[in-house]
Length: 289
Ligand SMILES: Cc1cc2nc3c(=O)[nH]c(=O)nc-3n(C[C@H](O)[C@H](O)[C@H](O)COP(=O)(O)O)c2cc1C
Image 1 (cartoon, protein in one colour):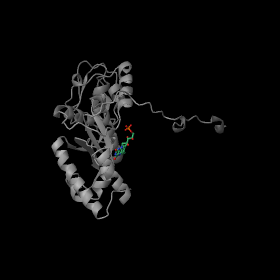
Image 2 (image 1 turned 90 degrees about the horizontal axis):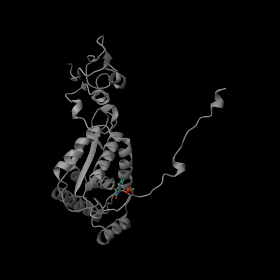
Image 3 (image 1 turned 120 degrees about the vertical axis):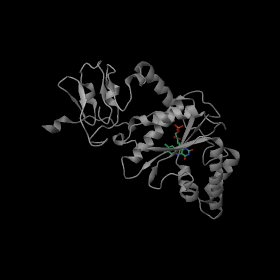
């Protein structure tokens, strides 16, 4: 066994699929017609990527890696049921801006956050970190401080990006008549994916992790809202932003609010991807001659 803990059981039939899918190219077929792992210096580009494709692809369930056993994996989805289910999740997911004031149980949140290790990310470097407020009272505490500061700044003529005095006052009026919390949409919890700049692909990785999280929430009957507005507001108040304890050199793409929706929706939306947004390519091969 080497540092990746690659183990092949007697069930291996030597099909070589694990070797074909390995992105790091660290597996090879031995004279014994079984896959082996070569020595490598470090996990990453020139070594094992820790992607577990070898474990996942093996039809015989013969490959263990990183101390993970194939029998502990979730089974592959059945396209006949998974396709319609995902369609339903995607069309029924929508930005929720009204929430019940109650905590999502910790085990549900833990189960969803654990799945985020499966979000695709540059080179499977797994650099995305997640800042979580999972308690309604903690969120209210943070919300109140941010609100107080936003109002203090507005009194000095400093408004959030894109806002002038008039637009800000409009927002305040809407808060009295439409929704009380325009800044955080009344969310009971937030999850903020963030990743170090200068390593991997932080911008893409953070957005993908956030998107996966929204769908995980949708699958558990939770509402979500991706928010960038509070980020631009927090930019104006470094001391409040510092309360989030996110390193300065980390990229933050959005704040995701989530919780039990106050107003359940009865059906999916029917938005259409207009043909003009889909650019289907065919090439003019005559130019070759
Ligand atoms: C990057 C990004 C930033 C967003 N920021 C906000 C926000 O600050 N406040 C808000 O109410 N909605 C925000 N939204 C939600 C969008 O308004 C919403 O996705 C859009 O209206 C489509 O509606 P749907 O999510 O229900 O399909 C944001 C969405 C994205 C993807």
